[in-house]
Image 1 (cartoon, rainbow, N blue to C red):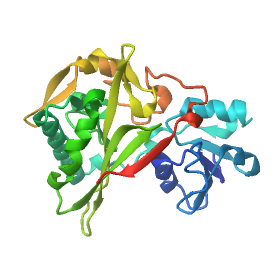
Image 2 (image 1 turned 90 degrees about the horizontal axis):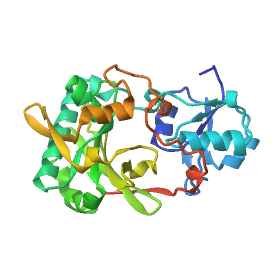
Image 3 (image 1 turned 180 degrees about the vertical axis):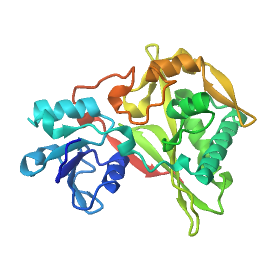
Length: 305
């Protein structure tokens, strides 16, 4: 990214907040977001504005801090007339928290939570498995990736509502409660619950670094298993999630997608070569959304526990 003194972040979500924390105060002058519910609010005293407000701002660069990269890029260039050299798509590492799993104690907590959730899903006969970067880390390196910042689980669409009911009291048995306070948030996309996000706040004196655990709803549509929270951007052949295999991890049988190496190749291409600085464009199979999807999807969150 070229040097810029005035940035506008397009996407007032968690990724935008993370990007903001990594830049000097005053460099980000505004957030832009397509969600009318976010417009008029603020993030760390920085206003969240509608896209039309870009014509009234003096900025050097628009940074896309959102999952809807294709749609927003098209919106910026074709609808709003923003020059391509004034748009930046950051690496995923720029939108992630600071490498929590590179710290041994936080890595230990991550592994305990992963094992605990896996056992919970098996105990309650829920169709769920690890997914995405978490799968990649366990298959290739036998651990959570040190440059990752979250744990990914997939829950089958048919079991998601029951999983939420059963998870209502999960935090009472979550690990390291003497060091952290657990919270969970439910993400809703256009009226459908699509992801439960589990996070924690370190208690005074704790050296643990916060990370997110995402329990993502997957649904089979036309032969594809789609992550509903991505509104169709991320998908895979449904046979990977119709049945599960297991992976031995620290003496536990962890559920993984069927034919995991094939799934990882579909997602990442050469997944055996570490790639620490990826953008959304680096995923081998991703459905580009170049219409106005970003402006028509309604996103909301509510506290779960």
